[in-house]
Length: 138
Image (cartoon, rainbow, N blue to C red; front, side):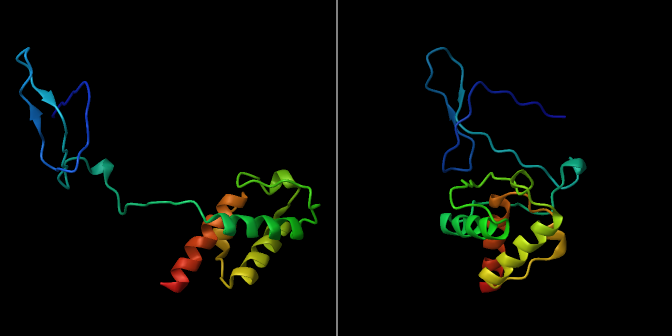
């Protein structure tokens, strides 16, 4: 078992640990820490991939808002945000299916049933659209 403690850690461009030994009190200041785990050291911390999630483009979010308003027959004055939940807007499961169908038609994509069941907000829908459009183009 290894223990590491530090008062402050700064991350720089270098991957080598650097110590500042120019201190007048005789101690060393730790500027950066690099931790490497071998495969079998912490089996409970295994991961199969690294995910980076980015928010959808504003124009995608806006288009999703328009489709949601149309499918739920909401007035133009109804304000939708990326955090707007379909259920809070009065959508039932059939409405959500119709929203997904409208998104598929507008963006020329196909949303798997499993993915469509996880969409509960405007942002989740926009993020999924961006992912599917990128996958289709790439």
